[in-house]
Amino acid sequence: MNRILLLLCLVCFVFSCKSKKSIVTKRPSGTSKQAPKTVNKEVHKVYANNTERYIDTHKNTAQQEMRLYGIPASITLAQGILESGSGKGRLSVQANNHFGIKCHGWTGKKIYHDDDKKQECFRKYKDAKYSFRDHSLFLSERKRYSKLFKLKKEDYKGWARGLKAAGYATDKKYPQKLISLIERYKLFKYDKAVLGNNYEEFKNPIKQRITYTVAKGDTLYSISKRYNITVKELQNINGLNDTALDIGQVLVVKPTSKN
Picture 1 (tube, rainbow, N blue to C red):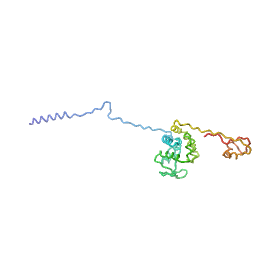
Picture 2: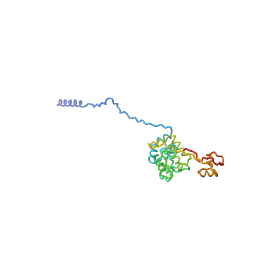
Picture 3: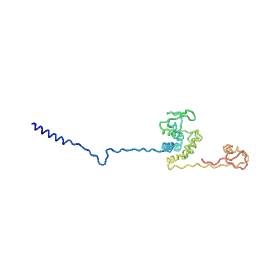
Picture 4: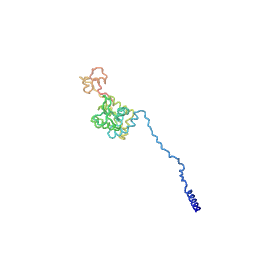
């Protein structure tokens, strides 16, 4: 009996050894132990100054506003640069207000800032894009700016002067500053991109010089009233030191000028 039990134990032992084989998984040839990691290299643009950075950041928004509301992107960008200090001014940094738009019945968030007067109320926006949209609405919905929209979109000089004439800014040099920015940074190219084949380089018409021949009884005062200018202006235009006139004398009453 003991011999039979011993024999059975031996058979079980041998069978158990045969079944315990380790399973080895071979790696495909040519593969590494760890999958390679994908490295994302972020490309950082280099700008010559803050203004170039500002233009690159907001040019698409300005062009979109031009498509929707008809305000030249060049004007929008130039105003944004000037009013926000290329995005570094307090109103733009703390309130996303890029155009110096004051409250004027605004029901949204506000910020107070010294401007023409101390602690004036300015609009505050959640994002800069809302400032650009409000700028478009501000111009397009107010009657005093309606004449601007009759100008050609290529006429950025006319728009710059029209903004000042309509009371957008109190700075006498505001138009010249806008025009200078547009021409320095070639902002008109963004207008051209929006208008495409409809873009035509705008050339201001040359105003012809107007003259007047002095007749008997004429005085500088009577001539000035006729052409709606001052006596002083007549003297300056014609290089006159006094008010004396000669019959037949030709006076320039409106000089040639280019806008």
